[in-house]
Length: 170
Picture 1 (cartoon, rainbow, N blue to C red):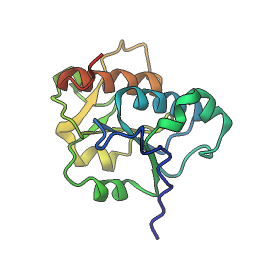
Picture 2 (picture 1 turned 90 degrees about the vertical axis):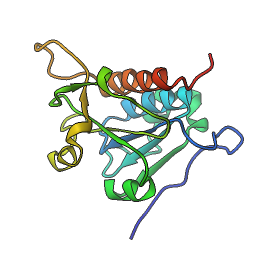
Picture 3 (picture 1 turned 45 degrees about the vertical axis):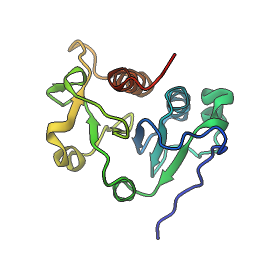
């Protein structure tokens, strides 16, 4: 059985087609997801959350981090990654992982692309990374740093994508 939670956006505020699809694979920290939701509203992206989630979607800390923008967010929860791939069959998928050899700056992003991020503690499963080896990307960082905050990473990559295709006017 496929279960999708309703999109929580008022149609008057929702763009007809999102500039990007930000997918969080099994996110664990509601504050990160809330901050990422705010970024999605700012750039006109749709946020997808893949179960299991480490929080309830009505979590107060999720809404607090998303502030009063959460009501404008176009978002959906999917039972698994395959459900999203079936829903967006034409979208180009970019997997973000610290194990990639290719930098984000070397990718060419397009409207409607999927930016796929793993959970805070485990990242993306190797099975997903193996599906798109040429589209596994990373942000450069000093070897002393184990990882970057998920919300910071999403923000950086999403704005790089929008910068490339000129999606925002202001």
